[in-house]
Length: 440
Image (cartoon, rainbow, N blue to C red):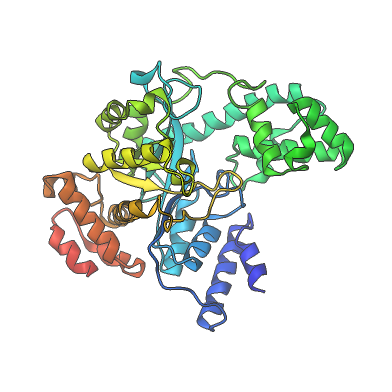
């Protein structure tokens, strides 16, 4: 019965997800499920099925599993939408879990137009994030920008699909019927298309030798080694051979393909979020100039840096990538940037949470946990009373970024989710001490 309820947490029906969570909480109260004490680990970068989660997790499912795992702070991050925010916040409140929500997109950085940043093979293009959004309903002045992120991405997918259809014929997709049905709110990604192609091929060729022959011909090599009919190696190969740089459907983006970083940061700030520059692994030309890159990002409003540790180290090996990771965290700390970390969970094999007990990651956990507390505190204070990390109130009360970080860390560490509403009566006249008294 517990497993069945957990499966229902991933239903595309929001009411079914909510009722399943309430039923699970009834079992917690009855002693049938024991939830652990809050631990030390965090994950502030998890995609949900509102963009693409490789395990099919809804916002509610992620919150439930995070509470079962005893995580200290968690956050959702979906491509181009804030669709997970309200559901995730409600689930976290029910679970007494510290949670926040954001989005990820791609932007153009004109200062780096000739250098690759973190989107391989695409000079000037950068993955970019906003975290700690207070509400899914952004101010009226920002709604068109947010709608544009999704609309542009969906049109880009449709155009890509047409090119890939020609190559993979007779395995051809209908976007509405085959792709959009894989996601609950019309925000499909390239990874949804890869899964749709794998399933369409089975429809046409069946699960046997004809399927293997088709994929071997279209992708090259022996497809039987790719985990047919829809294993992770097949899905990743479809994506790399047909959709990414060098693939038959790929079109090189230009300066007009994505919004400017500066414009995106203006949107994030106006919507109450925290702009975040994302970092890959320090090997590109752009990331080797990390100080210059952060100068640009911070000059347009970035207050945080995102890292995905699991792609940057091999347990037991002090290689160049882990050294790059240590260096970028050190640079971020020196600049008093918040360091957002997570596992993404939008590609097969990615972890639910990083193993911070490893020799490589253990020294970084205090930085990541402190930053998670800051983002959580910002999201609550911005939502409840408009006094978040990027607010004019904060600028007036804290002379340095170091003091600001210390204040928001303390709020995030001490505030309990069930206390969040107590901050709703505050206004711009409140002092930092007023807020601290309410959270202690």
